Image (cartoon, rainbow, N blue to C red; front, side):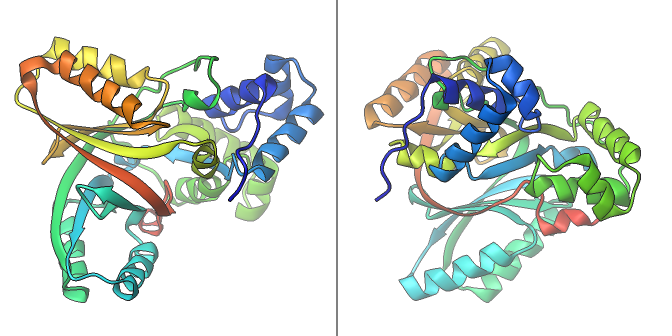
Amino acid sequence: MRNSPNIDLKDKRILREIFSNGRMPYSEIGKKVRLSKEVVRYRIEKLKEKGLLLGFNTVYNVRKIKWHIFLVYIKLKDINNEKENEKIKYLIRHPNIAWCVKCIGNYDFVLKIFVKDRIHLGNILKEMEKKYNNFDEFIVDNTIKEMPIPNAYLYEPLKPDRIIDIDNKTIDVDYLDIEIMKLISINSRIQLSEMSQILNTPRDTIKYRLKKLEKEKVIITYRPSAWSGTKSLGFSWYLVLLKFKQLDSKSRSTLMEFLTTHTNLAYVYELLGEHDLGFEIRLKTGDQLNEILMEIRAILGSDFKRNELSLILKEYKYTYFPECVKEII
C-alpha cells in the first residue's frame, strides 16, 4: 500500500492556485506563492509522482452547447465478478458515459450520461437492459446544474479564492470550437502553440476561441484530477442525495451556502427527478459525515424528506468531454 504523501504549506499554496486555475502559468503561480517558476514546476512534478495529482482537466458546462447530463443510479441482481467485469468494460467504452463509479450503499453503480434529450437517454437505457438482463433497477435524475467546488480540504488551512458560477444559456459552437475543447479536455495545460500546430490553425485564432468559450462559460474551470492522492491521504469519497418535501428560497439559499463553502465538498448537483440535490464529499471519518448530515437536517427542518448515501469504492471512468460531444447539435 502506498504511504500517505507528505505535503507542506508551500505545496498547499500551489494546490490552491492550480485548483483555482489549472492553466495558470508556472511563472504566475510562482508570483502568487513567492517561489520561482522552476521550483513550482518541480513541486508539481513531485505531487504527480506522489500520486496526489493525476493530470489537468477542463471542466465544461455542456448544457451551454445543447447537451443534457443525467445521473443514473443502478442496482444489480444475480451478479458475479465475471458478469460485473464484462458490464464495466461495456460502460467504460460507451461514448455517452462520462463517469462510472462502483459504490456500496443505496446503489451498486452510478453513471453520468450525456444525451441530446430524455428520449435519447431512454434509448441508451433500453440498449443497456437488452444487452444485460441483470440490471435490477435504473433510477434517473436530470442534473439542472452542477458546481465543481475548489477541493479546499487538500490545502487547509488555506481558503479557496472563488466559488464558480454556472450559466445554462445555450450558445452555438462550430467544428473548431469542438476540436479545441477536445484537445484541452485531456490536458488543460496544453500550450497554444501546440494546439495551433495540431489543429493547423493560427495561434491567435485558438487564443480568441478559447477566451470566447471561457467568457460564455462553456469552459467552467481548469482543475487537476486528485482523487487517487486524496484516497492515499485517508479520505473516503461519498455521494449524498437529498429529497425535500418543500423548500423555500431562504432555506435553499442557506443550504447552498453551507454546501458550496464546505471545505470537504468536491461537487454539488441541483437535480430534477427522484432527488432534489446531490453532492460529492471527501471525509476521513463516519463521524464527520454524520455531523454534516445533521447540519443539513437542521437547515432543512420539516422540509427534509430523506437522504441516500453511497460510498464510492472505485472510479472506472471520468471525462468532462465524452466521445458523443464531438457531434455538434
